Length: 589
Image (tube, rainbow, N blue to C red; front, top):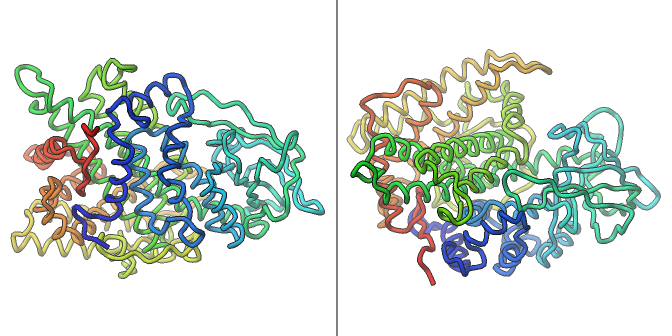
């Protein structure tokens, strides 16, 4: 494994795919901003672009190496999907859905099932995930689609709705009711090959019109006495809910790649405009209010990236803690990016609303529309906060004891550390060790305090870290005092869960900086300046503290302003506004 600088393996692989796709600002390229805008205007599925991604081998990244694919690092899949989402979220969502559809087999299926599905995906099969129903939304345990046993398999009846690629998918991984005992064990998963059903076993439901991702196939499928063979059952009968919940631990983290791609796009547009545009005889980026909004947005994007890097590596290194990691990541990253995009729209002003070819192919208004759906995927904001609330007693206990999986924490935060292979048997519905990352915060703060004492980092960075530690100490007390309620969860519990996600994000940033600061600061690229004296970390902690104690900004605080020259340097050098070196494809033939 390489160091955290220019040759970071996951970024290197994503950058290589970027180069093969060509400059997205070249209107002659298949996967260009202009073409994506035109497809969006016509509400047309990006079929040819998806086929190009197939040719480039992206489906192989959805298939574990053990079954013939090239997926051996979820960190790498995250960066590849981020690169696709940076060009167009519709394409990323349309193409990446096959991983979501297949993941339940990787998590809960037999080897024979996994190998057969892998061969189909590698051959170009599109797989959808049939979880939600029209009348039940995120309440999976209220599902009415039935799969009744017959002599040779199952007879399936019912309708799944608001399903990505429901029409285009050749296969659908279906969560269906196989019993009526009144619990989670009433549901099973079936991997249904629609091509083997024939009509009238199923019929496609019309695609719905959407505000964002207009060209995506968000539709549904209805089954009527569909005869499904017994070998379609994924895992044991009654294990469907457990397999789905474990699979969501992976997909919720991978959703962060969609948010990062959207943030990359929005920040590139706003920064480029502010650095070039003049107003009142000065560049827009030099005006105090604009500079502040750019600094806040840049800091938020870097914080979201830090959380995603650590959470992505946690899939391998802290697998047993993913119940908390995934819920935190799926809430925090899309929420933070939504806020940053809104703020960047203010920087662009009226240009943020322009569509068609009036300003940069209407990219900003499209990315703002498209990203709003990411917070809904794989459990919306409230679902993920509620998942954390359900874990409060365990999280409080582990936070009090400060238990830490030291080896797992090192693997999750040190970008140079080799990652263990993903072991699905380590997935757990309860994070029995809590969150090692948050429970090790005090150790990280002590390390930062020592670095401030010897002059390596500013004293202000240590003070911010100590303020976060104090917030975590208060959080631990409130978590311990919380009393679970089966219904009507109080609003205060959701606020407490939000604070937990912010503290997790701060700890992710601290440990990521500590473990990678020397290698990243030594890199020759423009990102090195972010690491040298902990600048990006201090800015990230300032943003977290603003969430934990809103409305109390420090009037003498210039850390966000000091970020802007680094943003300008990365923009001018044609690299991604990122913690790590990533050359963008701009102006290429």
